[in-house]
Image (cartoon, rainbow, N blue to C red; front, top):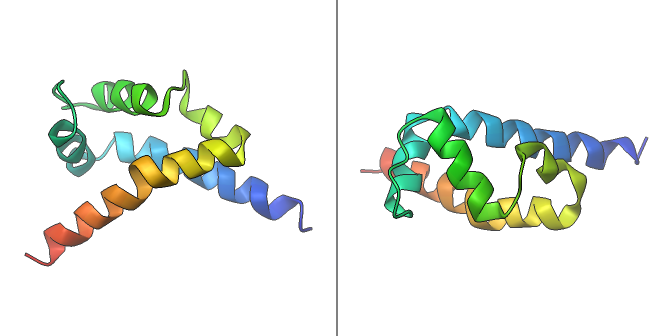
Length: 88
């Protein structure tokens, strides 16, 4: 049973990455951190993959190193950004 929990967490990060790429607020956040315009699911995916140095979002699921990279570079800062929008 304990072996299943990390797998579920990794899948959640991959799913979260997928959902972020469909979110216009994520596009805005990514655009502010990029020299390119991020204004669609496809451009968000390309930006995310370049930032994480991956070829597929599913690679986030493959190691704890990739999970941590996703957390540090995307999940935590984007969550903070979203929270800042609701407190304005």
